[in-house]
Structures are given as C-alpha cells and as structure tokens.
Length: 189
Image 1 (tube, rainbow, N blue to C red):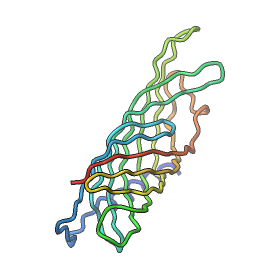
Image 2 (image 1 turned 90 degrees about the vertical axis):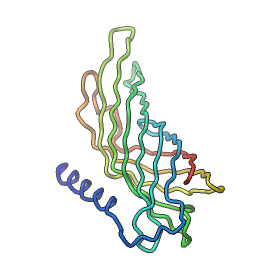
Image 3 (image 1 turned 45 degrees about the vertical axis):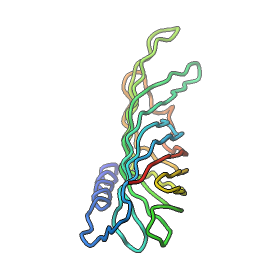
Image 4 (image 1 turned 120 degrees about the vertical axis):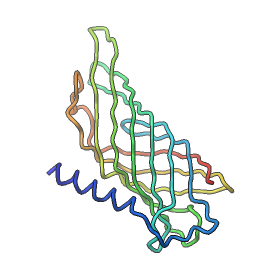
C-alpha cells in the first residue's frame, strides 16, 4: 500500500511542475523568497521559494522549502533534542481574482525530513536517526503584500510515513499526524 501512495505522490508532484507555454507573464512579479519558521514535529527554520505556476482560473504557484529541522524526542524518563533538515516541494492555489500572489490560499507538499540525535545522558549515550516522507501536508494561509514585501501566516496538518528509526529511535513515540503552523516573511521580485 505504501508503494501505491509513493507512486501517486511522485505522479502528483510531476503535475505540479508541468509547464504552461501559454502563460502571459507581462510585468507580473513571479518569484518570492521568504524566511520561514514553522512549529511542528519537527519544527523548521529555513527558506521558501515561490514561483508562478499554471493558470486554471486562479493563480497557482510552486513552492520549494529548504529548512533546518529541530525535534524533541520525549520518552517518559528523558527527552533529547535532535537536529537535521527538511525539504518540501508543493503548490498553492490563490483564491483571489486579481493578478497578484496574495490573499487566501490552500496548498499541499511532498516532504522529506531527517533528524539525527546524539546526546550524552546520565545513564549513557543516546544516538539515532528519525526520518519521514509525506505527500499529505495540506495547509491554508493568507498572504499579505506590502509593495514588494509579504507576510504569510499559515496553518495545516501533516501525515507522515515514517522510516524505521535507527539506533535508539523508536517511531512509536512519534505521532504520524502532526499539526503545523508558521509564518513566512518574504520579498517578491
């Protein structure tokens, strides 16, 4: 069943990056680069790149998020902090009728994250790796523009397909469903 979902996710991501040769770009601003912070499991700090996409009645964009990941692993008697990375590729649909990339939007991402733990505890060393894939990370947000600058708060949820933990990591202590919320502050050019 996981193979089916993985193949479906790959096919969906290829549709997101298909090109539209009839796109009229005129003088529209088409790229936004944002600093981004998100509370989730794992939490993320990084950069987001938003590109103008296909037009099917509404304004669509493609997104690439590259982030530093931070995660707290809590197992009753102890908790440890891990660090790693997360990469997300996805798209957004804006629900305004104008030509600007602003207002209410929905989005979804294909995600991969890898967090490593390496900490000395009172009773010994804790060492391991937590990894996941996700193709179901819907979010809703509202992008406000102020000239070339933008503020973009968002909330959502992620369903993670967890890779078997390595070392001392046991996935039964990590939720597959994770709420997400964050903020992007960007510049459009």
